[in-house]
Image (cartoon, rainbow, N blue to C red; front, side):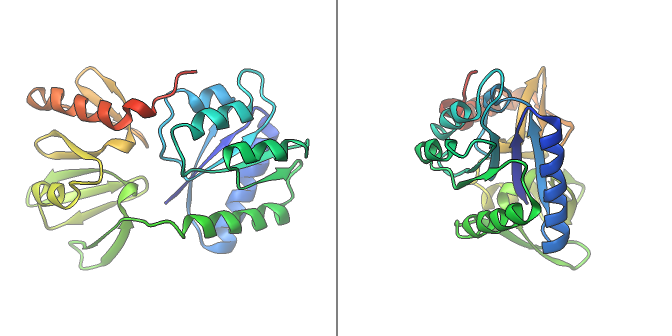
Length: 240
C-alpha cells in the first residue's frame, strides 16, 4: 500500500488534499494509507523513512516545509516530495531537496490528479520486494513485504498482518523468518515476527505497532530485539 503524508498547518488545506486523495482512489482504483502532520516539527520528530510521498506546505509556524524537507532528505533519499504553496518562487528551492514538483494553492483536482499520476509512475519504477503465497482458503496473493506489520503464530498456521487486513497461511514463523531474513524483520517473542519499519515505540515490555496495538517482547529476546531496532533506525533518527 502506498503511504502518503500531508505536512500542513491549515486544516482547510488538509481537508482539500484528503478530498482529492479520496476522489483519486475511487477514480483510479488505488488504495492509500494517509497520515497528516500539522507542522514540519511533527514530521521530523522520530522520522523513519517509510513514507512513499510527502506533500509539504512551505510556510508553517515552528519548522517550515523546506527546512523539514532538507532534514528528511538527509536520511531518506527515496521519499517523493511535492510542495503545496501559494508562492511559486519556492519552486526553485525545491530543487535543493530533489522535490518532484509543486502545486499552487488552492489546489484544483485537475492539477492534483495530474501530479498524483506522475507520483505513481515514479513509485512503480522502483524495485519492490513482494511476497507470493497461498492463503489457507486457497486464494493466491501477492503483497509488498514493506506492507507486512507483523507475523503471528496461531496453532498450525501463521497470521500475516498488514495495515488493513490479515492473511492466514499454512506455514511457520521460523519458515517466514528465513524467507524474510534480509527484509528488516525481528522476533520479539517466540511466536511473533515484527517488521521493524512498523515499530513506533517501546513501552515497558511491549512494542507499539503502526496501525494500533502492542506486541509483547519476551525477556530472553528483549536485548537482541532492542539492538536490532536501534540498528534499524539509529543513523536515520532526526531530532527536532
